[in-house]
Image (cartoon, rainbow, N blue to C red; front, side, top):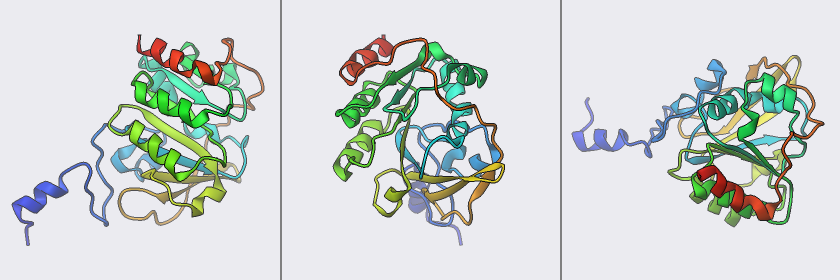
Length: 234
């Protein structure tokens, strides 16, 4: 039996989805560079205009390889990227080899105002991608503020959090948990708009190398976050 016209119109909206299908996105998604993952992500890639959370129990097992193709695409299209409070400094040769335009990358070290810095970067509209490691101290109110700051903006907003946060509610529409597997990266989709994921994905990804050396440009202090955002807009 066909759906009534009014109901069909409602279901066609980007902010409404059926429980047995993946949602569509109001903003075009960013291809992840991994077709098997794109097939499981609403919109067919990383979402713009919403928070994405990636949960890991440690760092340094090649987890950034998951995002490098998308980040390279954004930077080569002229977009600015920001890393806020990363647990390491990116290894410039490896990131350049992955195709990133390093001159469009801003790195902010950890500080007491990490959540505030992320909010400013999201709200300014000058960044195509903002990745942040807020630590265990971030609360539900701060997470909600970040989701609101990202909503409706053409930015890929990604928070890296501990797997311990999996049991806590989050406003992020997309949550993934990563783990090292033999010769692959295990990707479990914990939350997405649409039907639940049936099983983890196992992606064979090249490791970009350990991040031990700083980029050529100096990292900015948290107090300089707003200045960096304004420079990116200009």
